[in-house]
Structure formats: structure tokens, C-alpha cells
Image 1 (cartoon, rainbow, N blue to C red):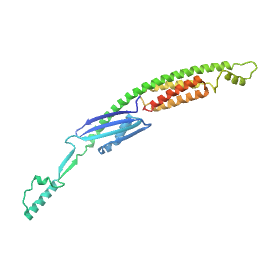
Image 2 (image 1 turned 180 degrees about the horizontal axis):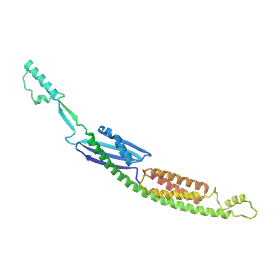
Image 3 (image 1 turned 135 degrees about the vertical axis):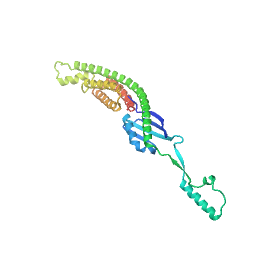
Image 4 (image 1 turned 180 degrees about the vertical axis):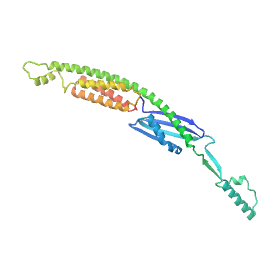
Length: 287
């Protein structure tokens, strides 16, 4: 059981560059991957997405990759030797033709425009591809540990709410038995009455405003609650399954209260709905 929110990072250094990966996940109904990667790694962007999809099935994923060249392996200063030869040749011709004085030395060369240029070192894509993917794997492992830690806190709270739901379902089961017995007693044949009148008078005499038996609804309610308790122990993503079960529990509670709107039943139904809503809030954070 994992939370959808978490954070992980990793840094690895290769021969040519140091790679940093930061990944953050947030709540989202579906899987939404947002990448921020250097242009040097655009060619492996789909491979990065595939790696993420193998680890995460739901939520928003923000991934940031940074690249810092290793000292001495980044930008390179290059001398344009062809241009220097042209400069020197032209200067020598000018000196001879116009009788100029002075020496051609290094200080003069340093002032000549466009003689030196700064060039970014070529990215060795195949070498850095492995480094990026290894960094990504490490960051995703750290993210998973973070999400599992948060998931344990959520699980503890959900378990507490399920225990309350079990008490509600047990209470409703007792109410169902009590109501059935009272109805049975009130509908016993009496001398001189027809069945329809007896049913109406019996239910009114027992103080019951009912639309039917709630035994089946209570049985289904208890089944859904037990399934919910089993579900939170799974290691697979449970968020969507939990949403479905909560809808089913809510439906059974609504049906029970509409069939038997007695005060004792209504109190139990309201208590159950309160627990369902608290679990639903936590389920929104679960993968």
C-alpha cells in the first residue's frame, strides 16, 4: 500500500558529467508524467518515460534531470589556426608595404578578434545514457521508499476507520434481527382481520416505518467491509479498487436508511457514512 505523494533523488558522476535526478509525485486520478531534461538527453526521453511507467501506475510525476560537466571535461577553448595564419600573413604584408615597425608577438595575437572560440564538449550519448538511467533507477527506489513510508501512515488510519465500520455493520445486523422479530410478532394472524390490514396495523403498532427487510443489505455491507480490510494488505495499487468498494458501502448504507428510517438505524448509518468519507479522503492519496 503506497501513497501517491513522495520524493526521491540521486546523483551519479561519470567521466564526462555529473547527473542529478529529482522525482516528485503528487495526487492525480491517472498517471501524468512531466519531464524536465537537458537537450542532450531528448533522444532517451521515451526510455525515461517507460522506466517510470514500470514503477508508477497512478499520480502526477515531476522529474528533473540536471547535467554538470566534470571539471576539465566541459567547455574547450580552441584556437583558429587558419585564421591566425591569415592575420600574420596580412600583418607582415602591411609591415613590408607601408614600412611599419614593431614585432608580431603573443600580446598582439590576444587582441585579434575571433581568434579563440569556446566550444562545448560533445556529449558521449551512449556513455551518458547508462549513467542517466542508473541515476533514474536510484531516484525511483528512493521515491518508492518515501511513498511506502507515507503509505504505512495512511494504512494505519484506514484500519482504524475499518474497525469502526465493522462495529457499524454488527450494530446494523442486530437491528435487522430485532426488526424482523418485531415484524414477525406484529404480523401474527388475529381473529377477524385480513392480511393487508394486519400488515399495516402491525407495522404501525410496532412503531415501524419500513419498506422491506434489510438483511440482504447488511450481509452485503459486511462483505464489502471485510473486502476493504483485506484490500489494504495488498502490495499492488489499491486506490481505484478502494474507491469502488467505498461506493458500494455507501450504496448499501443509503438503501438501509431508506428502507428502515428508524432513529437507531439512522444513527448507525450516519456513523458508517462518516467513516466512509474519512477513508475516501485517504484513498485519494493512495496509488
